[in-house]
Each structure stands twice: as C-alpha cells, then as structure tokens.
Amino acid sequence: MLTEERQQIILEQLKIQNIVKLHDLIPLTGASESTLRRDLQDLENCHKLLRIHGGAQNVISLHEEPALSQKAAVHINEKKMIGQTAANLVRNHEVIFLDSGTTIQFMIPYLIEHNDLLVITNSVDNASMLADYNVNTFLPGGKLKSSTKALVGANIIQTLENYHFDRAFLGTNGFSVEAGYTTPDPEEAAIKRLAIAQSNQSYVLSDSSKFSQVSFSRFATLDEVPLITNKLSENESIALSKYTKITEAI
Amino acid sequence: MLTEERQQIILEQLKIQNIVKLHDLIPLTGASESTLRRDLQDLENCHKLLRIHGGAQNVISLHEEPALSQKAAVHINEKKMIGQTAANLVRNHEVIFLDSGTTIQFMIPYLIEHNDLLVITNSVDNASMLADYNVNTFLPGGKLKSSTKALVGANIIQTLENYHFDRAFLGTNGFSVEAGYTTPDPEEAAIKRLAIAQSNQSYVLSDSSKFSQVSFSRFATLDEVPLITNKLSENESIALSKYTKITEAI
DNA sequence: GATATTTTGATTGATTTTGACCGATAATGG
DNA sequence: CCATTATCGGTCAAAATCAATCAAAATATC
Image (tube, chains in turn orange, brown, blue, purple):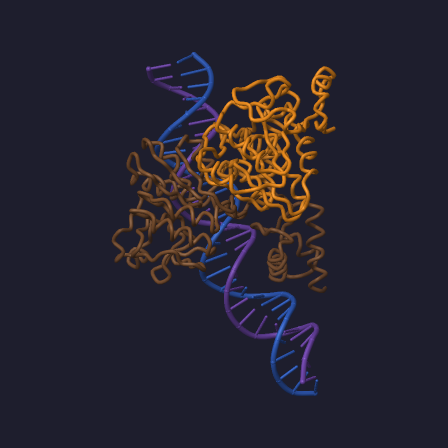
C-alpha cells in the first residue's frame, strides 16, 4: 500500500469517527506502528489532523473542511446555496470585492465557473482559499485583525478609495428592518461601507439565523443593499417583504 | 504497444482508482518499469497526473497539495531550531519583515517571547499564523501568487519602498558559494532584494538541504546577507567558512 | 538500403520508505 | 504517592523505489 493511500484511509476514518486510535489503524492499513506514526506526523504538519496521545483527532478548521466545523455545520447547506446563488450573479471578466466571513467563503468554490475574474478581498482566509482555487486575487494592504483575520485600518481604506468594483459581496453579523445590516467592529463596518460605495452593485449574504440580530455598527440599511439569504419563515418574509430585492436561494 | 496507448491505459486506471501503483501497471501494459516511469514523468509534465512514491495520483483534488505538504514535513526539526535561533535575534519593540516560505513560518511560535513587535509579511500563510499567535501584523497590498500564497507585483514593491525594518528574515530555494541565494521567481526575488535594502539587518534562513541548490534569480550573495542554518557537513562547513556570519543552530 | 533519431529495457548507485528496536515520556490504577 | 503499562520520538538497517546512464531495438529520414 502506498503512502498516499494510507493517509487517505486515515483521513476517511477521521471523517467517520471524530477520533481514531493508532492501534486500530494497524489492521486497517496493514502498515507498521512506526509508519503510521510517521503518517500522523505528516498529516499533522499539513494541518489535516491533530495528534493526540494514542491516535489523532479531527482538526476543526475553517479553511479545510467546513463540513466538520460543528458551529458552521448547522447552516452549512444554507450557506452553500447562498454562496452558489451569489456566485451566479457574477459575470466573466468582472472585478469583484469579497468581504471576510464564512458565508462569503462559500462563494469561492463556485467562482471557478467564471473566466478572468479579479477578486479583491480584505480577508486572509478568503485569500488563501482563492489561491487554492487559482482565482486571480489582489489584497489591499492593511493591519491584520487577529480575531477575524481581516485587514482593517486607515491604509486599506486609502487603498480601496482608488479602486472600483463591478460587484461587492459582504457578510454581516446581523440584520433587521430597523437596524439594517450591523457588525461589531466599526473598522470593519467602515470597509464594508466603502466597498459598497466603490461598487456598481453590492449584496449582503447572510443565512436566516442572523435575522433580527443587531450589532454595534450599521454599515448599510436594507434599502441600500439587497440581501441574499434563504429559508425565511413566514413572519420574516412578511417583515422583509417591502425590500423587493431580497433573493432567496433554494 | 504504442506510447499513446500505454499512457491512455494509465489515465483510465487513474480514473477508476484514485491512485495507481507502478508495479500494477507493468502486467497491465506489458512495458518495462523504466518505460512506465518515463510515461508517468511525461504525464506529470502536462499535469495529467501527480507522481507519488510508488506510483501516481489523480490531480483533480483542488485542496490537496501533497507536494507542498511533503516538503513541509521534511527537515521539520532543523527548521524548528533555525526558527528559534532566528527569533532570538529579535529585540522588543522592533519592526521586522518576514518573507514567505515554510522555514520562516517556524519562527512565528517563538516570536511571542517578544513584546510590542510589528511584523510585515508578504505571505498570506504567515499572516494567518501570526494572527493565531496574536502578533501585530501588517500586510502590504499586492497580487496574490497562487502557488506560494505570497504577495508579489509592482504594488507591493511600491509599498515596501516607503517602509523601513529593523530586521528582515528571508527564505531561499537554494544557496551556493558561486550563485549566492537564489529563488525561481524573479518577482519574489525583487521583493527579497527590496526587503534587504530597507532593513538595518537581514538574514537568510535555510536548512542545510538547500546547499548547492541553484535557482533562476539571485537576490543576494553570501557576503551580503548572513545565513542561518544548521547541521552542515564538514565539506559544506569548509566551503562556507569564509562567510563568518553564518550561524549554526544546534 | 544506409544512416540518424527515437524509444526501449537493463543496470547502476542514490534516495526514500519501511519496520524493528530502544530509551524517554506520558497516562493509568492502585 | 509510586509502580505499571502504553505510547512516544529517535535511530538503524533492510527493502523498495527512484533518477540517470547506456546500449540495443525500433522507427524515421534520406
């Protein structure tokens, strides 16, 4: 059995169970303990798993396998649909802005359908994923915010003022009729606001769980920017009904 | 059997299974080991498959980067030592530049020993890790290079020209007495060169396996920038002996 | 038909992978 | 707390695989 084959088996086992014992892998692969140890080491080095005493455990990574992240798992299918719906709005040869946030990240796999895109993003995580998918990507310079891995600060504001986008896709921490789209960090809000101003067309992507959530800084009202979401309840639909531009991804 | 015919068989086998062993191909094609090796080489050159030890693998998997992962796995302990040695050179309150590359990445865990650092890096991967370790980080804007996830291009050059660093830590693809420090991509070489120019003190970090490796673009000679490496063989030590600034991390 | 070019298969030594071993370290159970 | 057991990381030699070379065979060219 080849190295790659073994390592795939290990990762598959990890997907099924969340934890795998080294001893259980021996009969499963036919390899020796030493070899399997080395495999676990290799896989840990490329962040495919986390070694623990006696075996290995799934790494909860935003970037690698969103399916495995328990928090994200709840709305994962919604987010995939929203991502696909949003990506379908893009046309070939466009310049688009991608905000930070997990929902936006789900757009990326669908972007490869389009030719000759240029993506500008303020998210380091998104940038890394865009590179994986071989999408032309540009990062404006800025201070890195540790918690969200987004670029913020005066520098990026100044840079973005010189750019213009065909479309901007933004994440949000909450939306409601009264408060509009809101996010906790004023610096991130400032970037979102600027991205909207510099774009021909902007969209906010959010799964329905963010409905009626309100954070500190508003970056837009519901009239200003259409919402792409899905599976709204009847009450929610009625509340939002006058904002006609809302797209429901099914 | 014709060359074309053989290669077709290999690709068909790869479609069925995800991995194919070189030995299994011998009875399947009737060709010799050498010939099949050449076939695999040819097919890899036109990106139809990915060679692995003992056979070949489908190339379709977007997320997998076995080439990069395996590279990272090698020399891991050397790199840790080099990273620690390099990090010890840093003083509190300094502004430092971190190049892209796995070796440089190993510095990051040791940087948290220092207070009030500001790190500028052109690597998205490094940026992400720096955020994990809560290090003040700034990213200069630039085009994202997919293969290495490094920022390159005129924009980043222009930005860096306005900055000045206490220290710069650079990776390299190879070093030798005659060719100096070299790297395959001229654009990355330009950034390294500029980082050196803008720094009070620069260092190149490299494990000893890069000795006598030569790539396309030189970004510095061995006199200009000291090398931080380890475990040099006697011959290598003698060859490098006149470059007194070389540090061996033990 | 003679000669040049390409393809092939065998051989070589170098490199990588592997499994066994051992002392060090960590978890377990009294 | 200590003793016992299991797991860990490192080293080593054997085995497998690799890249490079070269001469024979096949093919192409004139």
